[in-house]
Length: 379
Image 1 (spheres, rainbow, N blue to C red):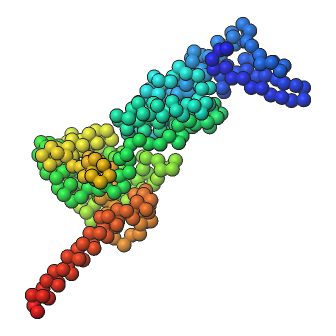
Image 2: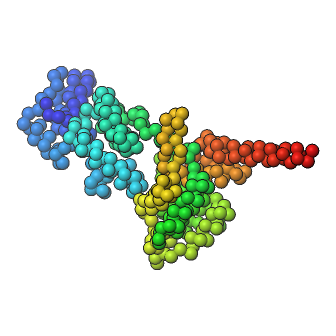
Image 3: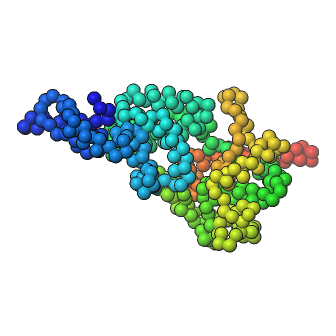
């Protein structure tokens, strides 16, 4: 039997009719009545070959091209709606997926036993757990695309658990000591120090994500807030972020206005040549300064021996937590802060309890101890 053919059996008052399609979702190449499953003659084989313009329709590789192209103008609406950075990252994973499964028949992905194959593939990449999880995520989105178009009935990658144990970073922030160490490392960089410090300062003053830090322009700055349509989608929609300006942020903006810019550049953050950062180059510059801090030891979040959790490098994304601690010291509620940074109220509450409330308790205890010492000395 030719691989990839799609047979449909329909029963009506006149009996049983078989429809044979070149592939699931493809053209019908044979319609025949009768109880027996039909076989193809030379006529139908000729129609089949004519229906396979790429030579691989009905395969997993063909599904990938239906999703992302090429050509780009033939890519699906779902793929075209992704941010450019996401398309680049997911495209890399799609190349790996096609290399492994591109020639397989699409029909095999309707078999629940493929879950084990996906788990096996994930585990084979366990040395790089974040990349392994990313690969499974992209595979799940591809299968979701196929299921929504009735090309598949199930999504065998939909509920595959992550293996990266450092995924929850809600409690990690940049402390004052971390910021001081980073700034000292930036000062030692000839010609690149100020742009590197600008990245950290804007991140901790606004809580913006990497893509928004690289893309935000002066047109989006008002007297009281930065108003920006975030590049990253949240629950399928691009969120309109309204970030209130603190006194610290206003001071930073005044400094940023004085930076050298190439004519026509309107971005808040620019590199040493006066040009805007790409998200990738921004992260690269930030990480280089972070890793040079503390004499080359870098800036890390200490692990926990009792749980076996290792030390972890602090990321640019963790500056969002620092911004949250600043907001927690105002009269804003957890819900209001969560709306600003697109966090759940529960995550805001964790930051508040760990870095704000506990610190206030310690200060209050210290003041009480000091007063008690003074009273004993007087008495």
